[in-house]
Image 1 (cartoon, one colour):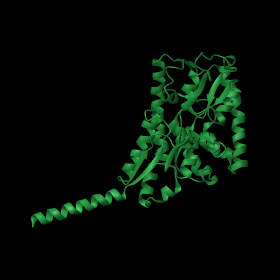
Image 2: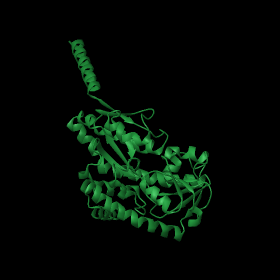
Image 3: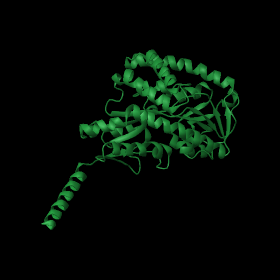
Image 4: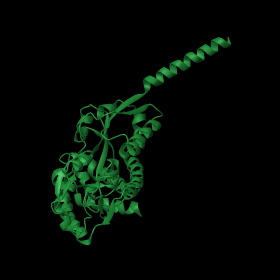
Length: 340
């Protein structure tokens, strides 16, 4: 009798195990950043683990070993079902995603956590209805820490030092800032920065502290000119293919949303802020000279920022029928409130 009971229990365990294996959904996340980078190890991998825990292991995210497309193609890869999920930069497709540029404007703030949470709240109230992410399901957004000026030669002490300087940029706001400062902007993703610096194509880059370390530039870049609250911030987002999303149970969708949206913005922003401080120290340890921007450079950025703000407000209304002035005011208030 005992042997029959044991046999039944073993059989039941095998059935449950088999059903558990069948029940697990594996989502393919297209990854275009190095696995050694902070973006992957500090952001993407931990979020994937949170998703698996939240769904009690029913949903597992697997990352591609190499990207299935160029960085600007991430939206299309998800929309077309080539990948279930992907991370992308809003500035890679500025004609498609305009509204998040509000968080990219100069002097937005020093904290990724504060800006990311504020941006998500503004998105929910003002931007979501414009449906800029049509074709994919948006799971979350977050921003980098502020960007500064990183150069091979320097330090950058005056506006004259920036004239004609070839600086890598990505997106319309960084391009406008570089131009306004008298530099020559060269459009390219951050992953190309090292190659371009070594080839003499660029003299430096507009980047955030984490980006410099993430792409191994701390031993190449010699100078950083820092701007309080930054020249701009970079907006990232994570999206899932709608069909992939619909295949999940309502229970698992709810569980994934519990670690996405504002929770994702808060958790990632906090980690981002911590890593930025570590990255700055790593640059200093590598011999990079840190120079605060001079008053004339800051004044020039302020002059650049004014028209950028007005242009964004006008574009939000004309292109997306969004009250840009109210949205921008809410963004600033939420950042200030969250930071205090």
